[in-house]
Image (cartoon, rainbow, N blue to C red; front, side, top):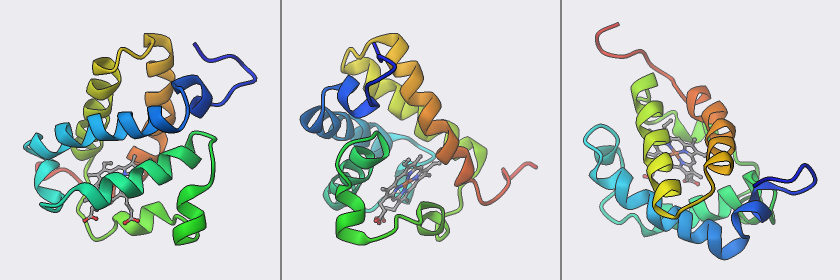
Length: 130
Ligand code: HEM
């Protein structure tokens, strides 16, 4: 569980836990019919960047900013058409990864809440049928 005075980073288990989460998440993304095709064949560099980004996003060391400067994540996602369905799919892959790693359900719920902010913020186009 998440104590009021701890970060998500600590609650999940720190550096290696974030790495494990990201390494469990991307195989699900890759095989997802909607969002998988947006990602490059070689997913390893994406895994590395996401590990660095989520470490800092969850309150751990500023690995991503130290290497790449200001994240500007919405701008970095602009080259890709992202609809609400894409955001839902991304979050469902993350939910699957948290479940696979047996993360406490309350903590998982909190993590997904934190990620849904940026996920829906990155939506930059409507669904086809809209
Ligand atoms: C809303 C659904 C999302 C989609 C469809 C999506 C898709 C993508 C794609 C296609 C890339 C580029 C991969 C490449 O070619 O290198 C990317 C990069 C990245 N995404 Fe997302 N993403 C989503 C949400 C998120 C969220 C919620 C976060 C974190 C809170 C995130 C963090 C990142 C990071 C850190 C990178 C690497 C940026 C870099 O190149 O430095 N993404 N994403």
